[in-house]
Length: 107
Length: 115
Image (tube, rainbow over all chains, first blue to last red; front, side, top):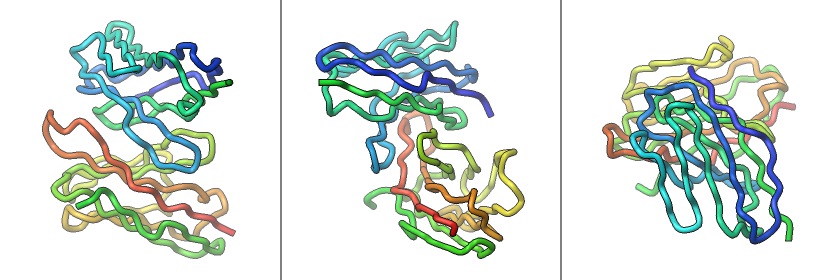
């Protein structure tokens, strides 16, 4: 299997933007995903990007994909306390997940 | 069909006992994955089925773990001679075939506690 890596922690203030980064090694994946997991809850697909796209915007979420560097990022605009969760990136070819970035939003 | 279902939701077992978990994927999803997740960690890949064929198994998986998907529908994961280190959440996910199937749907998981 291939590797997916993320930084483990991110802390921001309410209203600020959050940027969560991910690097991956499998360049053959068709899709790259961001999943969200709230405390005690299951994994929920937040958004995804097709591998031939550079950017995807969905309301407060912006996904950027740099295929050359195999770098994926998730930007959350106007971060709210309800966005506090663990965010996982994953790639579609063999469905490997990163270790997750724990986002803490301070009021 | 309302999603991926896993049974049981919780299992407490004594060390050394065997346990078996079941996953019912979304109908017609041909891909099925098993993961293990411990507190503060990401889902760790265990094994992958396409229809009834087990195509990949993690090198980290000991021979105490075995999985089956006999008819290409539901799957079972068995852990023999359980150890305390096996305590974790075991997750199942399914994904349909084809480029239009973009999302892997996860079950709620089976939480295993080995005492």
